[in-house]
Image 1 (cartoon, rainbow, N blue to C red):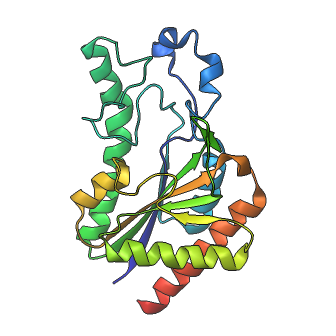
Image 2 (spheres, one colour):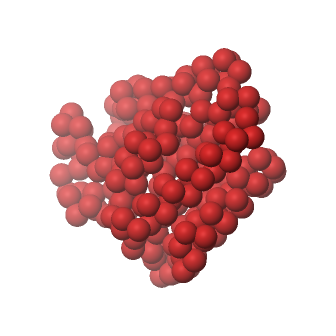
Image 3 (spheres, one colour):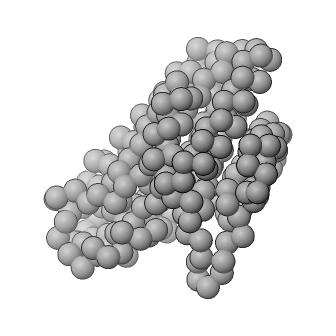
Length: 232
């Protein structure tokens, strides 16, 4: 079965569309932090998309407008800046920014699978080195659903490849978040129960912009892609 690689980045920027700028008049400082976007994720995504992807999609709209990595029912779909807006405005934001992004990715994956191909989807993120006083003890996290043997095997092999390239880095599985928590890949796993692997890549923001980390991630995935192509 032929394999297709999909690379996405849901939190690539901190842009606020002009139509909603008035709701963020006091948010300039916050938008520049990890609350506004995933620092370093877009640059890593761009390298991965260029070197690995059959299909790639990213967003530079701030997660503070609407959280693309949360389900429509999730309590944190909207931030403190947008949660209190009128329902008509919130629906407008969903229609203008949330659904177009998610539907495009979902449709592309659906097309690949309906054509008899399997999909490996890497969703690129980064995490703040410290949250609520807790120092995160990892350089890279690989998030997956432990109940899906293909995802578990993929991440174990990816960790091995990463460590072979950069033995000094700390790579942890389902850290700093659980792979089964609400997210885009979690939704897509339910939508595509077969021929879909969805992995969230989390890179510590202390490495934002690090060419060594970027190359390690890219090269390790190239190795996995070659293994998959050889098996096929």
